[in-house]
Amino acid sequence: MHESPEELEYTPPLRRDPRGEIRRLAIQVTDPTRLPDYEVAVIGGGPGGSSTAAALARKGHRVLLLERDAFPRFHIGESQLPWSNEVFRALGCEDLVAEAGFVDKWGASFTSHDGSARQYADFARAAQTPQPQTWQVPRERFDEVLLRHAERSGACVRTGTRALDAIFDGGGATLTYADPGGLAHTARVEAIVDASGRAGFLAKRFGRRVVDPVLRNVAVHAQFEGVPRQEGRRAGDIQMVTRPDRGWFWFIPITPTLTSVGAVIPKSVHAAAGCPTAEESLQRYVEETPAAAALMREARRVSPGRFDADYSYLHTEQAGERWLLVGDAGGFLDPIFSTGVLLAMQSGLEAAAVLSEGLKARDLSRRRFRAYERTVARRYRHFRRFAVGFYDPAFRDLFFARSRRFGIYEAVLSVLAGNWRPTPGTRLRLFAFFGLVALQRVLPIAARSHSASWAATVRPPRERTVEAGR
Figure (cartoon, rainbow, N blue to C red):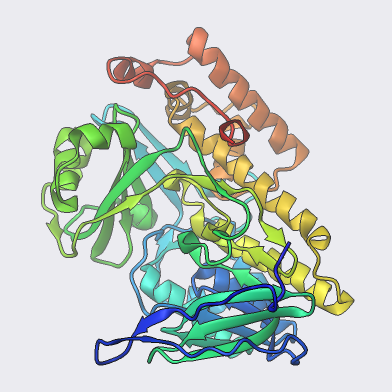
């Protein structure tokens, strides 16, 4: 139950003024009978927040978007999926993205740690993927394209602005935020969308974040020049190199000369083998992996190294009375198949749709948002099955020994392309694939190249669902 303004004892937050002195912001809690300044406030200007704001504004709603950072700003998650194209179309920004000069991506190549096994995932062969080409993007440019599109669509966008608090009552919510100069403001809104990512502006207040017990990894990454690329159409494809400890590397060409390079390492491995700095850790992991070392032989680092905790999680509540979570605020999935931006933007599009319907019906209850919650959780679990599978040696054995029979490989490719709505035929083929993975664990039907190399490292993680960890 949300407290009313009268029940909530509110202490104005402390902020540092431009002279470096701590001062308390004077904040007046608005009368809940005040008419809304905006219908919806969106907290966060990443792809999820921009998608929500743009979609709502294009439907004629008054939207306030608050982003704490000044754009452009650095972010990882550069590799996109073909299924994002339909989201771009729905938002009316397909041409903006296509004309931004991003690197074309047509697929992904997978290489074993020693280079002995290779597999190419060509999205042109993927089932249910009519537009197989997508992009590799520097996120500072890509995110700004989306944010400015939301602004041109009619949303009021304020960057360098931090959301401080939200007080809900029966008639709406009073949002308090600080502008770039530290001055406090309030806005009266009918609903709030938390697209603030891991910061979880509202998520940390409602429900809880359940960390996946299997997908607990650490990412260390930097940008380099001089990393070799494929020839022709494949020059823009992501290159991925596996490791015997269930880790892996990404090599993403984000400009004609710049490549994002990252190592995703199990938390337990990094705790034992990691170095004090991100740069040293990445160098060590590269040197340990022959196929990665070959790609990095002439590479020159041109950015600082960075650590990220790539722990996967799903929030127990995706919506409530007058609020919804979008993107990483509601869940984050291991980046192995580059689903992050697609999940964020798709949830933003859907959040906008249910909010628009609720605003028109004068019903912003959690009951109205139940279908949204189910869809977000179902889509997360759909992709999670494949993310967990990639850390299973039997899964990799079969993936690297692809079969042209029965369309099974094309069905798997469709998920790698972002297909979260498989047809019954595709779903049946995916079921068959996981049946073969189970068989491979006990009776090899493909070369156990990955199983053999991993047997000497650590035992595979026991599969548990997110619910089992609750």
